[in-house]
Length: 322
Image (cartoon, rainbow, N blue to C red; front, side):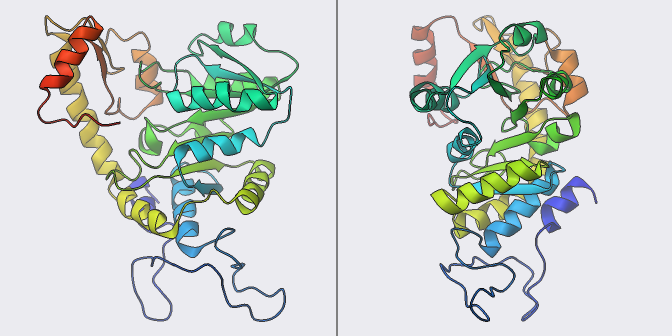
């Protein structure tokens, strides 16, 4: 089954009672059981499982060629769940440039629980190897990075992780599974903010963790049950709707971004453009091999903070919003 077909159909079947094609929003907290300890289709309580959430988890896992998907109430809730795979004194290797929320949760939350970490240039495997220690249990990579658009060779990272018996994690938010499928490259765990491209409509928050590792999946599902930071049925339904058009959106994003990047790179007032689709990008060739296209995210330098503020004050079409 091809990608676009999986996005439309996986995890979603017509209602057997009335034939409704679309997955309903199952707004229920509890489920009738057929007897003590006899739930129907393993549905007991919506903190644990919910049919709408299950449909989304199965759909998104299939897009990453993964077996297990665990959906959370935000991208950061999904990332925080990974912390619970670790214990005090464990060590994480992070990409040096990554989403500010990930940096914040590591420095101001995980650190207080005894987790240690290093932020390194994961585009250089030699730099990664330098910070490896016996306490290292995870390497967490973002590619492309937010906001500097660095590209890390995921096959090398997967090989490094397997050699040293540590978990490899990729935040695939900027690429989406349409452009890049880290599990196929040997990565253990993939995470996304559903809020961005996967939903695509700026009307919900969500996150997901996807893996083929049975032990990791079991731990994270138990974490969902115990902590309850799960995705709501309505937000799951919104994302199911949004992901159906992911392939056509990502194709257009890539085409539009390339045009904008070329325009900016030739503009006399732009100091630098960060976009892997440009030939001068240091990881351009790697991006060509690893990604289906170069994505829709661009960063650029206008020379100073004052110029940046002036530029943003004059923007008419794009919203100044986080």
